[in-house]
Picture 1: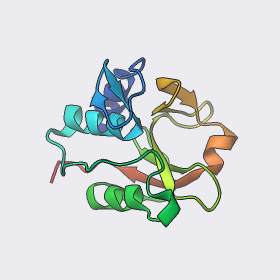
Picture 2: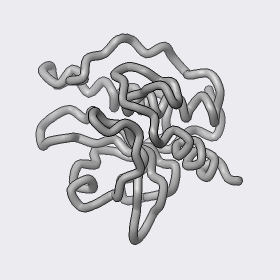
Picture 3: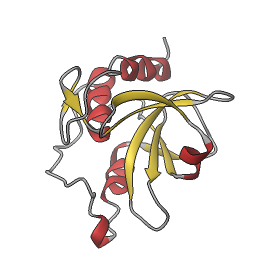
Picture 4: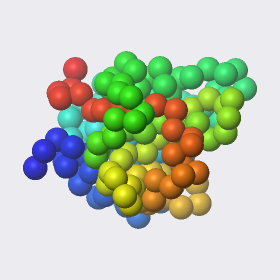
Amino acid sequence: MSGRDDIVCAARGWVGTPYRHQAAVRGAGCDCLGLLRGVWREVLGAEPEPVPPYSMDWAEPQGDERLWQAARRHLDEVSPSDEAPGDVILFRMRAGAVAKHLGLAAHIGPGATFIHSYAGHGVVESPLSAPWRRRIAARFRFPEEAS
């Protein structure tokens, strides 16, 4: 299996995990960042830095792109149009807002999907439909090895 396949397989193993803000435990609860953290641990090992407490608004009132900054520290940024399975997709939930939602690309091309966790649904695999695509702010890849 390739590294990208390992990422998708690990992420799919979290489907059905309930939504829990700031949690990162497969089967027990996670938010979108918790899903990414859990997949990182399964594929690469120890997390690269401790995650400080955060609110559900992700510093939106201050306009601080904390999630994007953290992604740039630990992931490889690629063009949003350069799609590959296992990519980390960063979403801006509304125009002018900070990017505060993450998902992992699962299937590329016609019928593209992504795996993510959000309130009221938990971890699901959703179609990467036009409304979701319009919200993509950035795309990242896991590093080949943990730093």
